[in-house]
Image 1: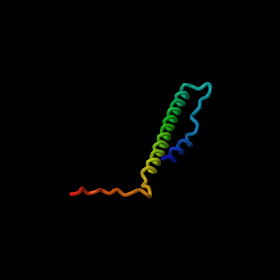
Image 2: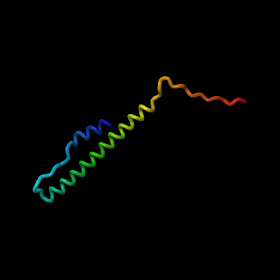
Image 3: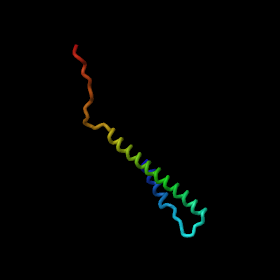
Length: 77
């Protein structure tokens, strides 16, 4: 997930830019492209975050080599 997030981030790169003297239609297209770019940035940010959390959880869930086995004591009768 981390790798996918980074790849999406690299491929999107810089957002769309406008220029002076744009028509009304070009301005609307620019606004739509900026919105899509912002949504992709949010997506790859979430992918990186979730992937990082999964990595942390997987390191924390491993059993340690010297961990003692749990045994239950039977009550004395």
